[in-house]
Image (cartoon, rainbow, N blue to C red; front, side, top):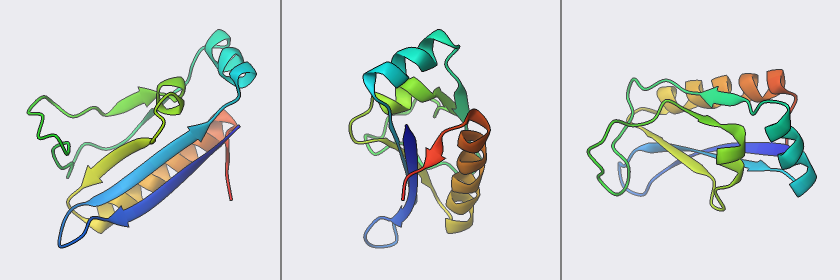
Length: 104
């Protein structure tokens, strides 16, 4: 069980993207679900609209199993680099509290 949180900038002067991936085996996923799936959250201040331009409100949290189920991970887009770095730090802290280690 592990996670990665990477910050990148989209080409041009595009938004800063925090990409979060969680790797769980089938047994770990079942165990997480049965023990009460944990939720991670992030700040909504400075969020950029989704890449699809969906006008709905952006999410501010997600269950760990939901993040793990996304093959390409979860992308959170921010206008400023500092906002993306803050979010990555908050997510790292939350994963540590849950007991999920960062993959190297």
